[in-house]
Length: 214
Image (cartoon, rainbow, N blue to C red; front, side, top):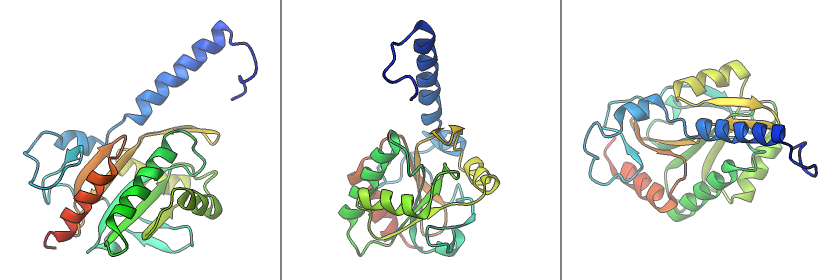
């Protein structure tokens, strides 16, 4: 950011290229568990995500973290609901706003009756605050049941590791994987998006998992 307004030198161009390459490498990191299951079995009829995971093959790792209201939220306590789990920075100006818009579109497509819970795990514990999290949600018109989860760097790092999320950089420039997981009512990962989400397909898959027997 400090380069703006000054002529780009060969050194600054080289540094910029390195930063862009690093960003591409980081944001395209896929969960090892998603990568391991991709293409390993025919997609179950009905699910249309980028990556479809066979039923009862990958339990969603449990964790408990406080949300924007200070309430503890855990994966296991939400059994019986479909979960969308993703990882965002409320101050991000690059890919996170795009993901925020896509998630909001999917929520609106599902409507208020959907039993979907959106869990956002912070990748920027130094700068995410309840106010910035609520502002992000309002900007992207989130509705329904959503929780922006925070914690200590060590607590969050454990969750990132469990879900295959790479996080690098400083509080001013956080680079991280862009992944959305869908967890079924029995607590198993069933679908994933690595990168851009298609809101209509996400809504379709949520309905499919909602209709499945618990």
